[in-house]
Amino acid sequence: MMRALLWKEFREQAERWLLATILLAGTTALLVHARIISVRESLVTVLLLGGLVLSIVLIIAPLPSEISHRTLDFLLARPIERRRILLAKWIIGAASIAAMYAACCVGGLIAAWSADTDALWLLPMAGPVCVAMLAYHSLFFLALPRVRSELDAAIYAFFLAVITFIWFAAMTSWMPVAAYFGHLSPGAPIFAMLYNQKGPPEPPHEFSLRVLPTLWSTLLTGGLWVIAPYVWLARPRFRRRFP
Amino acid sequence: MHTDAIQTSGLCKRFGRREVLKGVELSVPAGSIFGLLGRNGAGKSTLIKAMLGLLKFEAGQCRVLGLDVKADPVGIRARVGYMAENQTMYAWMSVRQIIDWVGRFYAVWDKSLAAELQGQFGLDDLQKVGHLSKGQTSKLALLLALAHRPELVVLDDPTLGLDPIARKDFLREVIGQLQQRGITVFFSSHLLYEIEPICDRIGILDDGRIIRVGVTDALREQVKRVIVSVPELPMSPLAIPGLLDVQLHGRAAAIVTDDLPGTRSALANASLNHAEVEDLNLDEIFEAYVIGRRSGGPFSLGQTAEAAAS
Image (cartoon, rainbow over all chains, first blue to last red; front, side, top):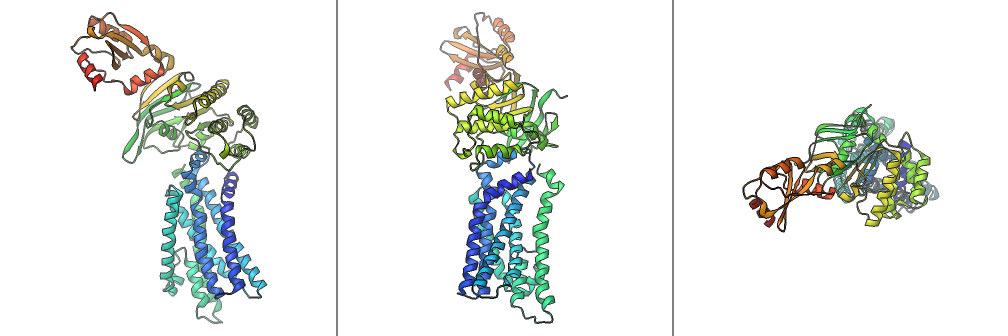
């Protein structure tokens, strides 16, 4: 049953995912190869801002469109628990975002290799950003089931994105606080990574002061915003609440 | 062994401040073809969704095929074939894809029956669902509601949006399929001529309440129109038992009642012995129950004339 739901979600989202991935990976490769502006800054822009917008595009589609097209009624008339429908949408959404960032990394690395640039640091950079985006995916996903149409979802998502950008900007000016105490926010890995990318620590404290906070933030955010929603969707109490 | 396929008691459902179902009491015997009649907005679809566990209800109880809706809605939906009004399916799927895909949600899925119905309905494997006509979409929805061999089929205004020919064609298919299989059918519609030839029992839902349930033929036997000449009617109030509606037609008054012996005796007591009794079709019975006078209290010619004028 779950496989059937995942197949449908994949088929419905594949086209949108492909476009978003081509756009993000293409832009990353172009910026790395052309070196128009600082590679690091341009990647932050692409991975963070571009990724956030594209992630929102991927997230807003599934549930509100089913509600507005009334196909959800058709689906719910089958012997399926609602949590399974949500779970399938959540899994495909999260997998799309992770795959989009993976494709982005591959694109960036190929471009760096062809331009003879060292860009292996792209991987540890993309990891935290990807986890942060997955965390935002969960946040949006939990908010969106209440939205009834695609237009409403787009409006909600736009305001959510604006608030997120303002939040990023505010937190960046408080980078030390954000890096170490902002673990409850979905953007925590990004704050930690940004701080530690340009932070002052030098060897022999490289691991403890540069890598560890980013790793810690990424794992914590991943656990809190990515693993926890999955467990919540799968738990028996949820099954009773949303039969 | 349960004898009622559907049993509800005191079912209440509210959307915000609006109470849509106000204590629905209903029993549908297993094996019957039950027609739920009601005007648009009477609460038919809400009642069906509550019965299938698609909507939560605030108060009351509902058992379908012996299962409690609140405790096991998924178990109920596995044994029920449901066709919603204005059913929308995934337009990007082909007929073959949607049949195979829906089949994966059911423990029992009769592929040979699905293939037989597909051939009978003339549905092409490769045709996209979005390219089907409304009539074909309804037939596909019926196929998807029947192929898991349900014990109960719930049809919620299944012919909504179809033209008269397609509607008749679809109903012929429905009747044929359902009569062959001898399963319980719960048919909801506001088009009475659809229900009349199909259903052996009917229930009338009005303003969130079931106001009448009965065997269709018995209802036709019970509810009659009594024509009385106006000059004979007394100006003083006249109490008619089982009074449903009173209408003036020229120089005659048409009294619709569901207690013919009582009405006859009341008229005889008022020295009105020249009453003519007429049979009613389901349409007229429904009209009498839903938009009729319904007070049941005494009436006089003066009141009736006033009502007719207003």
